[in-house]
Amino acid sequence: MPAPDNHPQTIDSFYGSGDVRSWLKKLPLSCRRVNGNQVVSLSDLIQVMDRALTGDAAMFVEKNALLGQIVDQADDLTATVENLVLFESTLQDHFDIKAVVEVARLAHDGLFRNVVQGDGESLDAYHGRFLSIYLGRGGSDKPVTLGSTWPTSAYTIGSLERQ
Image (cartoon, rainbow, N blue to C red; front, side, top):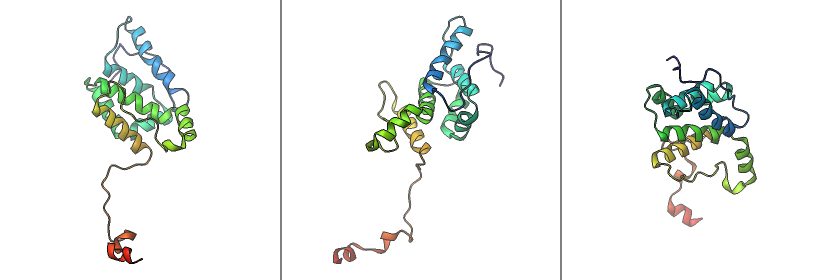
């Protein structure tokens, strides 16, 4: 789908390194300038973000099913506020180097940054953001089945009590 006329012709790309928060703040301003200081639609903003991603950032979005679904909704002009919040927060969670350093410093937080539901964030958006972070860190949302190879499955409560 060709970019509509209300998309900026030139915009800074994001490669996956650098200050993702600053880059995300500049995008709406660039879009407003092109549109006579009018706010652009959520779908247009997500489309602009997606098209400005290159390198590792583009690959991350391409491989993330949830973000791909959001881009598809934007292409269909049906993006929601929750889609925009989720798209931006997922990029920030994945590429914000300062936050990653902070996580390493705060060992008690493990691999996750603050994943508290934000003020005004819908439960669906929060769930999607949390799931994206979890899956991005190697987690799985598939149920675990314990087969016969599970080491503790050979034990019974009685045999454990005797030890």
